[in-house]
Image 1 (spheres, rainbow, N blue to C red):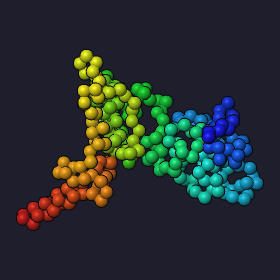
Image 2: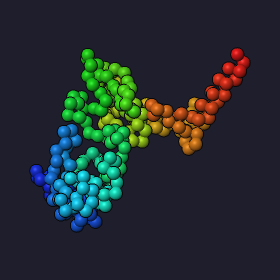
Image 3: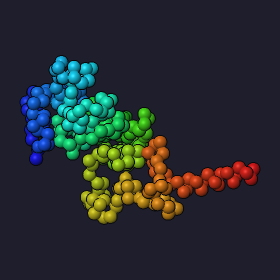
Image 4: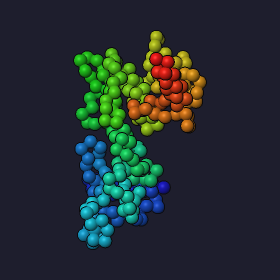
Length: 236
C-alpha cells in the first residue's frame, strides 16, 4: 500500500507501507530543481553527522529508501523510473549511471516542440540524439510528427531497452487511415522485432555485441568479414 508523507510547499512524498514508519519522521523539505520538479530532502543534524558520514550535511529521501545505512557512495545516482522525484516507492527507484539518468530525464523547460530530440530550424524540424558525449542526426523533416518518429527510431538504436520514446500518433494516409490498421509497422518497431541479421544469424547471446553508437552487430558476420580481409591482404 502507498502512503503519503507531508513535505513543505504543500507537497507530498509517496512511500511504501513498510517504509512509512521509518520515514515519517523524515522532516523533509520539498526542494526545487531547476528542470526536474521537486524532490524530498532533509538536513542531517550534527549528532547524526558525528556518528556517520560527517561530510554529508543533507539526505535525499530516495537515497534513504535504497541505502538506509549510507553504504553506497553519493557519486552513484538514484533514478525515478516514472520521472516523478517525489515518488519514492522501491519499485520506482533504481541505481543508475549518468547515461541512464540523462536518458530518463524530463523535457527541459527550454524545449519548444514538446518532443524529445526535436528542434525547429529554418522552417523544418531537425532531429538529434545524444550518445556517449556525441550528437547523432536524424535528419530534417517537414512535420513535427515525422521528426518525433525519427527520434524514436534513433532512440531504439542508440539507447536500446533504456530508450524513452516520444508519444506520437501513428502516421495517417489517404482518407485518414492509420498505418497500423493496414498492416504498416513503424521503422523502430521493425528494428525491435528483428531477431536475426541479414544472413540469418541470431542477434542474441554470444553472437551479439553493440557498437559505440549502440547499433547491434552480428559477431559471426563480423568475424567472416575480418577473415575475408585477411585473405585479401595475403593475396596482395
